[in-house]
Length: 328
Ligand code: NAP
Image (cartoon, rainbow, N blue to C red; front, side, top):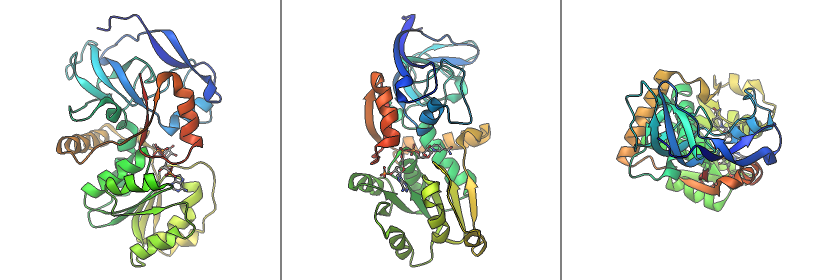
C-alpha cells in the first residue's frame, strides 16, 4: 500500500480558465474500493477534452472539486478486494480513473488498467489511453477501414493523429497525413504515413488529390471538422467515410457533396465504446506494443505544477509533435 496519507494533486474547484487548475499538496491519497487498483502515477496524458471539461463547456460536468486526467502510467501500489488481474509492482497504464490522473496517486477500476510493457517508459504509457482508443474507434469501429484502402489522417501530428498513422499503416492501409510544421510533418512520416502534407499551405488539398491520382481517399479521420469538413467531402472517393473526431465550432457544407458520392459522415465518441469493443482494441494495442510497431510518441512535457500552462498550450500553441504529458 502507499505509505503516504497525503499527496500532491491538481484540483479544480470552479469551472473557468486554465488558472482554475490549482496544485494542492494536502490531498488525501484515494482509497481502493471493490475491484479497484491504487496506482503510483509517474506521468499523465493531457487531452484536449480535459480543457473543455475544465472550462465547463463540455456536455459532461464533473462534481466540483475534482482532479482531471484519465490516461496515467505508473506502478500498482495497492489492490482492492476482488482484484485478481493485478498485483503490487505491476507496471500499468489506464484508460480512465476514478479519482483523477493529474496526481501522485490515482484509483482506477481493474478493467480500465492495462499492462505497460517493459520496452515503453511511463511517459509513453501516458500517451496511449484516449489517443489510441480513439484512433482505433475512428478507423475500425466507425469507418470500417480495410487493408488496401487509402486513409487521410487530417491532423496527424498530435496524440490521436500519430496513433492513427501507426494503426492504419500496420493494418495495411495507404496512409496520408497532415501537420502544420516541418517537425510535425517529419514525425508523421516516421510513424507510418506514406505521404505527408502541410495543412497550413494554401493548395495542400490539391496535392492530396494528386497523390491519389484524382481518385480521392476512402476514409478521413478528421481532427478539426469545423475547418475541414467541406474540403473533406470533396476529397472522398465514391462510398468514402469521414469520421468526426475533433471539432471546435460550426461549419457549412453542401449536402450534394455527400449525395453524389454516397459518402458518409460519422461521429466518433470514444466514451461510447462497449466493453467488447474496448477489449478488441486493447488486444490489438497489446500485440502492437509487443511486436514493436506501436510506439507512442511523447511531445511537450510539463511538471505537475505547470498543468495550467499545459492546458493553455494544448489549445493555443499550434505545432503538435506527439502527445502532451504531465510528469509527477
Ligand atoms: P493534439 O495532440 O493537440 O493534436 C491536434 C492536431 O490537430 C495536431 O495534429 C494539429 O496539427 C492538428 N491541426 C491543427 N490545425 C489543423 C487543421 N487546420 N487541419 C487539420 N488538423 C489540424 O490533440 P489530439 O489529442 O490529437 O486530439 C485532436 C482532436 O480530437 C481534438 O479536438 C480533441 O478534442 C479531439 N478528440 C476527440 C475524441 C472523441 O472521442 N471524439 C477523442 C480524442 C480527441 P499542427 O499542430 O501540426 O498544426
